[in-house]
Length: 154
Ligand code: HEM
Image (cartoon, rainbow, N blue to C red; front, side, top):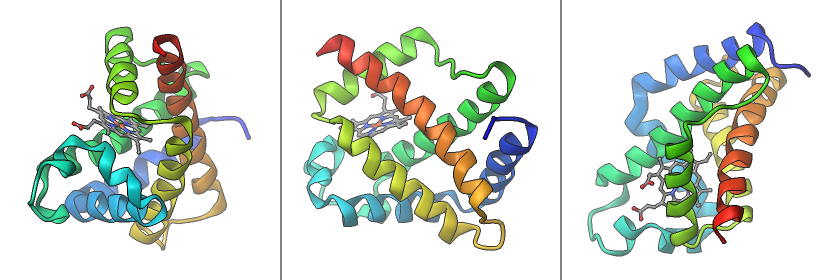
């Protein structure tokens, strides 16, 4: 399915609802990631080092917000230009951070699955196959850009 105004609206409208409960959304997103891939906790320096419980960890919330907001921005870009544009400096930094943290391509699939499940649980009344597809496309384009940068660095 092409990415048009309808797809962008599915992403943006659901995000506008979810971000009102950003802390809960972030926590449930991470719990899902770690449910599927428990060893992924070891990738995050702020989880390795800290003895703060997950739901009190500000950095965990920051990463969850970054994934959601960047996927949301990707949706807007996709609708406007048909591709995702992340600033080159940002992309370089993202590539480096993820490579250096030991993130591999498969982790992006885990995170995608967790993202979609989180949205489904957070806005069940809005959830539909078209919404799943729109978020999936926005995420895939963004993830592809980061993975490409990681490949250049490895
Ligand atoms: C760091 C975004 C996917 C694991 C970061 C940062 C951002 C970010 C903005 C901090 C920026 C920096 O320090 O350079 C994203 C986006 C993703 C994504 C937009 C998907 C589209 C993933 C995946 C994993 C992951 C799939 C692995 C499960 C990490 C880790 C860090 C990090 C381990 C470093 C955290 C630390 O130890 O401080 N990510 N990320 N990210 N991300 Fe991601």
